[in-house]
Length: 203
Ligand SMILES: Nc1nc2c(ncn2[C@@H]2O[C@H](COP(=O)(O)OP(=O)(O)O)[C@@H](O)[C@H]2O)c(=O)[nH]1
Ligand SMILES: [Mg+2]
View 1 (cartoon, rainbow, N blue to C red):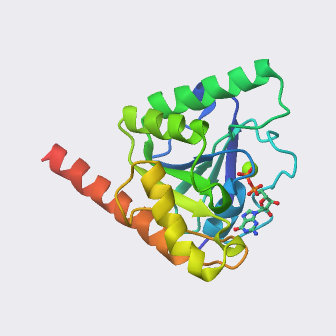
View 2: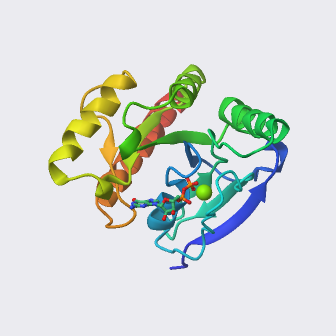
């Protein structure tokens, strides 16, 4: 079995690889932990270059897991020190990707555990993803930063503030690996139901 690999970086939608069957994309504020989650899902730190400068990830980055699933790292939003023109370009890139990318099967939307109320940016992106008819899983990152007793209440707070069904958000820590199994399972469950409904449509 081959290990996880980096596939390609795309600066625009037309550069996204056409041969992919379906893909799972990660979105969220700059610094929320997108690259750290991807590194955990891929099982390899070095593959996902984690930027310490918010807003530096300005490309759509494609990775393949050892199991053959395609994971996509999208540029973050909400960064402070990026020129407005660059910001507008990135928003356009992410929006066109979310709206038009046929292969996009599932979106993982990340919320920082210490910002459980979510930002207007978070709400806007969630609404847009839903508007585009995309399936979405909300993942609450950096859960290790909260005392154990605060974790469940924080998940409920995220769900409430984003108007999500109770029990739908998943807590995760890239630091301790907490929640990695649950995230993997949620992805596989979602992809399976998507596969099932696609098969039914073909019948
Ligand atoms: N304590 C803690 N820190 C994290 C976790 N995930 C990411 N970080 C840190 O948060 C910062 C931003 O992470 P990164 O994955 O680059 O965020 P991105 O901008 O969304 O890709 C880095 O310094 C990470 O080490 C986590 O689960 N726990
Ligand atoms: Mg990143």
